[in-house]
Image (cartoon, rainbow, N blue to C red; front, side, top):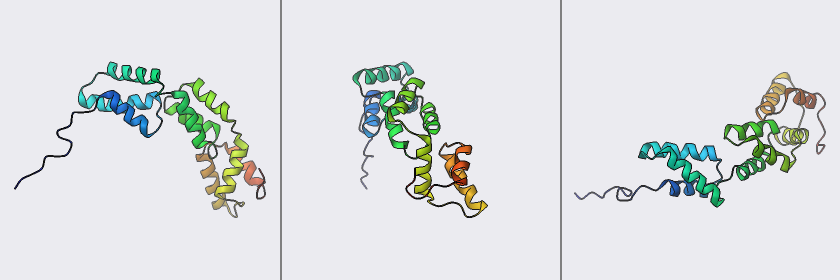
Length: 164
């Protein structure tokens, strides 16, 4: 019986730069996030951390890797359903510097109250009828980063349909 070799066994492993460009071709990454992905692969192949940093510097110089662009992308994606605080925390967790995150948040002009009301209308659309429903709405809105005081004000006097 003749066995075929595994399809990838004859291929050379991809270089760090090729792997990094492949990741960036799929979606935006922050520098810290891409470093983490490349380091995981570099440890498996024995490549040095200095090599990873050199590749990241080269990609940044070429314009392929940008924390500012990544921050703008995240802000656009999460803008209508999360508070500024939650978006800022997401960016910080991904290793984006404070000035890049602040510039991205300022560039979009998200108003937390308007975002809270719009999200509440999309998700629930009506005032809670009992304490259990109220607790469910509060938990959901808090998970999106909105302040408890703002949520309770909204639920105390819920706006009508189409009211911001």
